[in-house]
Image (cartoon, rainbow, N blue to C red):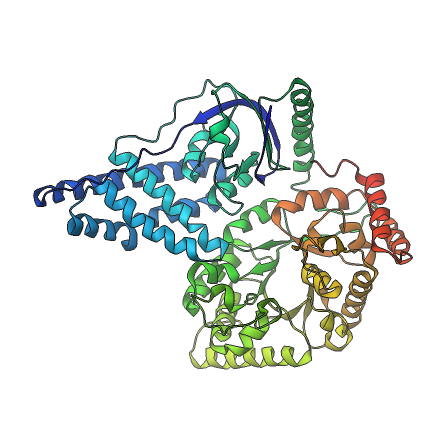
Length: 581
């Protein structure tokens, strides 16, 4: 038995025989050519591009049947790469100038492009290198007549094992009864991982050497997508244990899916509004599928990560698309929430010793007002098409709220002068995530139209810890008395001001902490679309009166550890089957 640890990118358990895919390219050789052969090499290259394009379009069609239109953008990325001058145009020039074979020219040019993406520290931009690798791999295979049709499986459910898989290869495999996959490369944010989650198939990536450990395609494999574990040739006892787990997991998923169309309420009849946190428009369809009330947090950072300093018109088109996809339900758009240091190659930013506590979020927006105004104007224009709200992140006090509102007023005047169509009265709110703001919510509940509570940063800044730091992460306790005191105050001050309040941090999407939020009074929760069904499950299992008793009990705890124990007992009593791992 061999146990390998990787990154679990899609939850679930699968047990089955391996379907080993040896996709490694043979080494590309450099071949010098004569002037007279240049035209032949370029023709071969163009024909391979045409075949690749046809192949991607075919797979896109296949994916539409199972994945719907929301994930077709993944294949559009590949189609765009086939027209990219830095990749395709440069390869043609390389063939002509260097007088080499097309395979080598493409490989050489692609390495330069991949190196550019490799050097960036941003994970989203870095991930683009894999898109380039995948498309180059396909073009070269067509040039070398190595095709893309996998050998058919026997019809029995199989687990794909490969060095790497592109989204198009995964879609092809799913047509052949592949129920899970495990690969050497990959990351959580790769397009292949996104498709795995959308399809609900267990997947573990980043295993580094699983292909070196597979002996034959009939090896028995266990994929544990919860824990990022893959077990090869399991012992009898382990195998039997996982077969039982796999069955339980299938039953668990069936139970969760019953909640898809349910408007959720507690046992004692209190309705709870569930919203979604999204960062790309394609996630909105999942939000709609799970019957979310709208988008509680639309992150705009991805727009900048994808495109850098984006024009007003481009932002308007992206936001308009998001608003229309959201089907006239509320959508709260958070303004830029990064520091420029993360986009230093795309946006202006001075050097800072401590960027996390420095010029980021609203502070960055107020410093670089032109960028901020471009965003605010695009949002007001998109608001014509639906129920849009604007939220300012990392506000520390009243002064920043007023400065931000002044910028909004300036934008409205400019839009009027430019005679552009826009909505004037867009509700304005703040993300309450700094203790300084949480302590004065009674002073700002008349300054804005709504509060959103960002529990991730609120907890970190209140307790003074970085939850990603392994040495202090144990101190990250949402039930710490100081955190509960702030959460209670924020809710009460929102009530007194007659404004809405939503929790959009991870506490809202963690079923364990939802009874705490309900007991404190919160009825609007915003979370990742993938967390919605579990949230519905716990809400449908508890009474508000029980949640309020829980809070009274937690209030008496001087130690966060004790509060956690009480909470875990509460969850065991009401929904012991809630967590599957």
